[in-house]
Length: 213
Length: 265
Ligand SMILES: Nc1ncnc2c1ncn2[C@@H]1O[C@H](COP(=O)(O)OP(=O)(O)O)[C@@H](O)[C@H]1O
Ligand SMILES: [Mg+2]
Image (cartoon, rainbow over all chains, first blue to last red; front, side, top):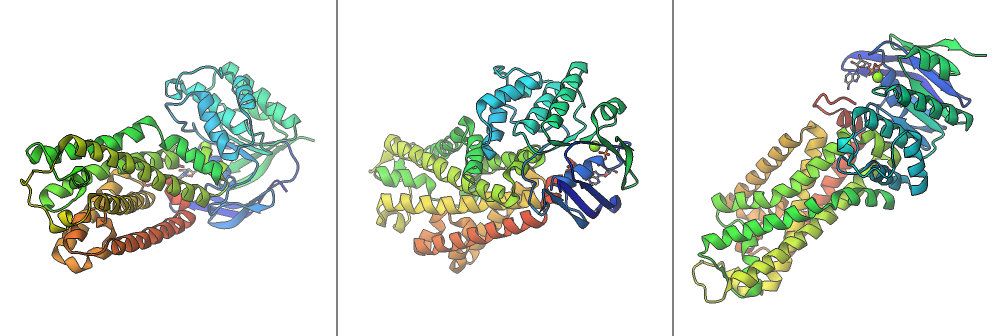
């Protein structure tokens, strides 16, 4: 079982954001979650990442409980625009992050930076990057360790057309490598082009929206 | 754990961090020199220890202690806030376990305090070389100050300072975890240190049990409590503090990440 959410309810400031969600992913693929702004897509993803704690129910990733300070193994994620160390270059930022797990080498990090359309030898500090460039770097950190589960929350935010194309390509490559990708997007095209299965988040509930055969 | 230690070290041990603390020690030593008519009383070691012996005079020495304390607080506040409110999804998740992240940060912070404080002490030694004056009778010295060897004074003060600075800094972080606001947290610590110091003046017998004051060795020396008292109470306080931080981090992680600033998770 890749992801297993059993009867997960999440209250925030008195509002039920997730309402008794049962959600499982058994086979690798690209899974999309759609829903209007504020419907709880990010809360759902952060609960899977272990950053938010279910009020009721529990979440397992690769068979292990997450939450209460435990995070999924073999996992990569992009939420919002991540905060990099502003005075470091893109490469130094990724090297620093990679040092925590120590599973990728500098050569691979350089490669990933190229994949998202940035320049590994660019010595400029990330503080000087545009929002789009930071978003690309955010995607690079999510994928650089080749996780088995990749969670991308609105990865196309702030990207221009070429950025969008590159991210689509990345997602398709990961899919062909057998990675499971969870993708939240309000862009219809992303969802139609990329996803094997699509869920709709509405009133705290998640239901199958479209299923490919 | 080793990798996480390296991660925290890499960001903490930056040129700015390593320079600001010795700079503040220089400022403190120069202030003391300037109010003592250009000299520090005693031989090299006594002269070097002299600017670190605070507080004897509440109004003047307590602010001096805060000036020394503030860079440590500032550096760690910035770090914790950036990590928890901006880098959480990058760093915490990779660490696999939030408590590993927390405890490796605590280890690195204490190491940082030891290294930078040592640098600060070298600044004081340098001040001792420049301004030491064995003929000086201008200052009314505490008997304990003249009775003990200068080296003993310096070593005692070093460990007491490391303990009380560590306790202040970790308290500051604990308050950040609770109230989510670095400025308010630091203010709270400053108030606590002030209260603790005033208490020490009012009720001298409890001085050994006020670990926030350990750095102000003069208080202990004046009342003739052995160094070991301060070290033991300091270590106990530090251990309790770390345990509380672990509990808070484990059970309140979500609130900590969301913060009270509406920064949003
Ligand atoms: N930190 C928070 N505190 C309180 N409510 C929150 C917080 N984060 C999100 N919410 C609420 O949860 C709901 C879902 O938010 P979110 O998951 O960000 O939606 P989406 O990603 O689908 O746009 C919103 O109503 C939002 O107000
Ligand atoms: Mg969202």
